[in-house]
Length: 371
Image 1 (tube, rainbow, N blue to C red):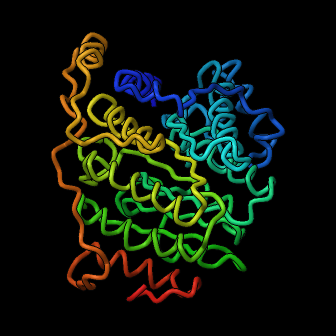
Image 2: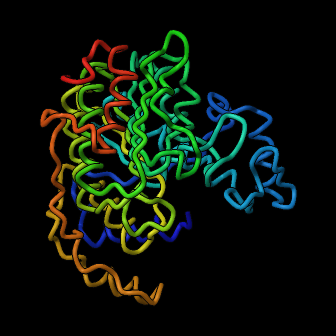
Image 3: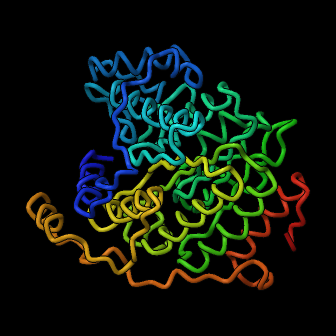
């Protein structure tokens, strides 16, 4: 989670000319005030984060602070609150019509819970942004999470709220943190069918991952008809990522960003906020994946074979001593067979997809086999 990965992403966007487009505004944000954080997080927890932020020795493990996953550091509160401020500002700018799309690749801190830190995440920017949209009058908000880890934080916050659809496509909790996100987690009483989880087996590659996303996300979004779409693009699904066990390419990640962009226009009037998330191959994967995301949000999609600018590659080598990828592609076709091709009971991915469709589609009036 080092800021290096964010700096490299921003530098790559600059080198590719993505920030030069007159239609693109690069903005900053103030840290979210406690009043905003408290729309999702408990006041006692925020106070504990502040104490640890001022003196890391004061970190309290009962709040998930000072652990291997969430080590305390000076300025931790301000850093986390600024991410929340940025995602919330973007969401409200989109809702109020000041822009059509927004992207905060620093965001996507989806494991943070109301009362404790978890999984490298201190404050849950996605959940706070969704709450702000609801408070501003949005009737329905959809959140789609394609990180390799289950998007457990937004699901927990909105478990009982039928106005929020949370969809997470991730590696199964049987083999990966946080150990949750199974198909039978469908939402609380009165909100059944608004928590959706596709738990994929380890080892799934592009074709299976893309099939899973496209077999579940489009029909659900079309049925739910959100006012705003918020998406989380953790790129730790990649084959080179050291934490997950999926085998996905940058090309497939780019395709999913394109699909979600198209769906935002189809179902949400184009109102789309895209966030970052996990991603720990900080040279080979993260900057390229999120530069593609920025390009897609900006309506300037990059061809997969686009050369990675030489100046950026030289900077990477000077900074890290490592060679950087030469192109914006892994050379994969990003092909998949749609669900309409038929269910294969012998295929583990198809079984995972059908388990999810059986669990939630009927709640939304959809046929698990044919819709």
